[in-house]
Length: 303
Image 1: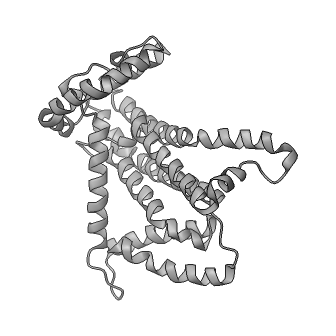
Image 2 (image 1 turned 60 degrees about the vertical axis):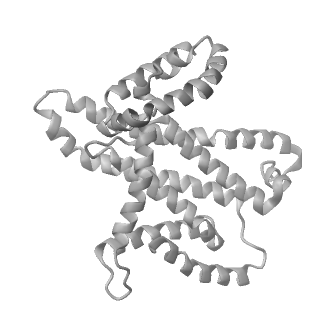
Image 3 (image 1 turned 135 degrees about the horizontal axis):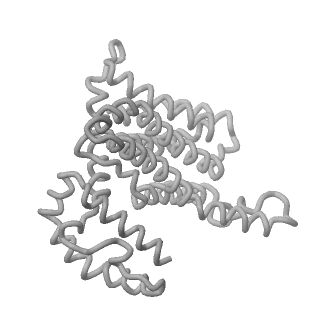
């Protein structure tokens, strides 16, 4: 356990040294305030908790200083949220049904793709979850792509961000399951239909669900971190020769990784929703109502 914390601290120290200028500027102006807050509230908690494993906050997270009080991934994730809004606003441009621009067409392709996946996986009633699922898609894609541009780093190459995204998906689909089926009904579906093996199935399903935030987070982090490490390693093989040429040649691969990891995260989130959300019993009436509602989901996204 101590070695794990030591490796995390070394990784954090290395990333602080390579942090973009934006991160350094944020810490220059707000780092002291964040540092004072950490030392007063969070540091004592981590000190007591990590002492049980024979470690310290410094060994786990690196040295506590005003210069690194606000982690680079926090700054980059806030930037990703802002960029997501800016990109959507720029793509939608001036909405037009007769002559849609290239940006509007690109945005509509993404919207229709996510809506189609929701209808196929969850059902027509699943369109009510479109705003949350589409938010995941846009935010994760922008976060993945940020590492391809100077002065930015991909926040999804940090476990803190990917675990937070995985936990958000986990909380959301469990909230939907409890809201639609009640707490007892939500837990009951873990047991399966066969009563005599229900305790065993319930235990397996419960564990399987509890580890989903970690599997979602690790999958996204591992692929994005590995992609950046491969590019960085190859780029430094022959300094001055491979530093610029190789990253450009491998950029299509990075682009593919960014899109496919966004797709996998969104797909799994929808599969989890399909397990806990079911269409109403009066299917014909509700199906028609869902189709009417599906036409309305385009408006909030594009406007």
